[in-house]
Length: 448
Image (cartoon, rainbow, N blue to C red; front, side, top):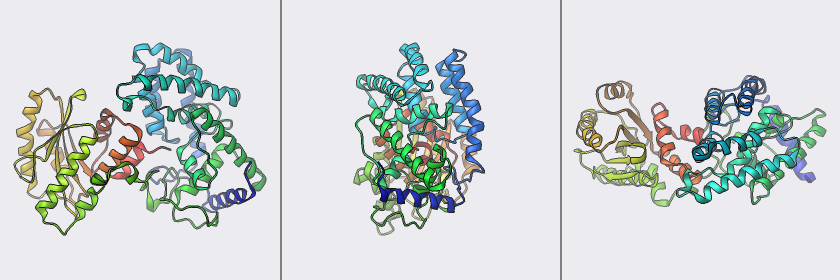
């Protein structure tokens, strides 16, 4: 039961949401004119994919691709993040040897449950299947994480009946934790049962308070508003422990997607967490600072599970490192620039071309078919578009990437937290426009 003091907190959360004119923003800070209407329109298409898959009109590979493509164009539920599409990708990839078994299981699990007990039974089936893959996997980072199952299944159930099934969002759990509503459970079955019951109780409280029927989306938006606006003034309770704001779908435009749902330092060793600080350091000589910065960048790529060959060591004759991933036939030349005021090309354009002309043929002889170039710096202050176009048009470099120090740290944190494999990291790096900032990494991988 929700106690009276918690009832008052829920009332205040609702009042703050209403006072914001019930604004709902996407992960990039753009306001939805009407997210609920947009979702209802999207549901029409998504239900078609589910029905086609269940009827056998499309196979599981086509189903996965259709869902991925649609959500990338219409990211209304956050399915493109770790617990949605990444879990789906890893589930399918690890089941290719017996894809019919997975297809049959998914058809049963994704089908709309008639009650909570049936829903929990479906979660249990998929959780056991996922655990079976993970327990046998040599590299558990490439196995589907069973902690994603509650979100994954409840997403598909909500598509089929949005009034019956709330989605197990990490952002909602974080809000409940901050309000001291939440109890940690041992598995996804127990977690979803507790979440479902709590969500129903919250809707009852709001029904009584507003005199109107409150649905899953109403409650969801209100709690997103509570967690997503760190500049709000609220009297929820002075005893609530203040934490770093967690940015989800709802936030003020001036703080667009700036924060992740965890403390960065929790997933980094102290040695590498100093990267941004080191890049901003103006006390040491530029050569010693640059050398230390290069070493840290190389160390981070090593922790991202690349094979790292350090070359630069403070000289101008080589890039600072070459990173390789044999399984993907991919290599990158790395240049680390410890510039506190932002890096611009200047005289380096000639050196970069020399690096490329010297090392690309060697890497091609080693069998690397995809070669890229990454510049890592705290920030970038000049327009590199013309230079990048020239490089990718006239050399064997397939992708030229400008990567901020903070983005690199977040990439490592998500890799550590969610067991993201190098193949996914490579795919992510080559998919963004330049420069890649921390907010891009957060939007791609943060749990919803």
